[in-house]
Length: 364
Image 1 (cartoon, rainbow, N blue to C red):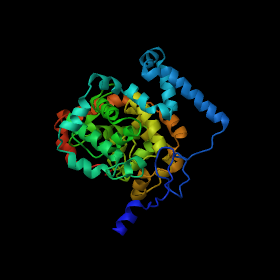
Image 2: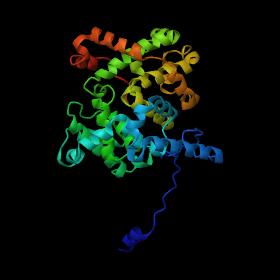
Image 3: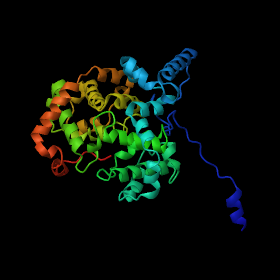
């Protein structure tokens, strides 16, 4: 009994955990600018406050002015989004630019129904993968804690909402990223907006059996590499490197899996507004930035380099302007038609069988 009293009332020392401004546990030896708390000058603070005021004026209360502003000044909106959405407004703006806010308002009570009253064939798979999603973030670290429960609920609800897609591991990183900026229900409807195509082309093919849309994107990307970076493309061919060896997770998780979080957020800002073309642009910009090094490397070192880009290449203020300068929209449409023609009906339904037999993408 005495022992029980001690265990019950004696405070247990909890080691202090240092986290960056996004909530990720800091690596003691890391000096990455990824979110380290920096001392801002009065000028920088005021500049950020001015930026937030501009955004608030553009959005209106609860997003009331957003659609009107977008219609009047689309170029201003595009420019400001490319510069980065203020972190305190990111969740709301993501919902507005993705069309998910409208879906939420049109479907009251649906999310609750899916979570509470429906069962999913994917529940055990989701539970198994939960702890693998952003394991270094404080929100998701506690086993069966609020973060893991929210992630489970969103993924389970989607697997019921769209039983053809169900659940695929990479979806956890997308849902996890959204949950860091919005409620469960908001994150669910943004996932629906993305996969069902509320604003841009549907992306559910990223997660269907055989990953048909991933296969299409990788084919398009391989052609773009040859056209924009011929020396890199030729070297990759010589070393028998294809995009499935390094770029699959770029598309499946939209860079949220292994890229620095501050860069992933900036990419997501643009991705939700402009669509998947930014993934192609960022991929090409990375290869362009590392061009001189990549063309010298043999197979093994090349694979490692393509999965571990140097820190300076991950600076959004350097990488993203380079990505924006690369024009791919028209060529992507042409390559999409060529891919569909080449694969015939396989690009739609039969292609799932073929894709499943091909080399699988690198694991998440």
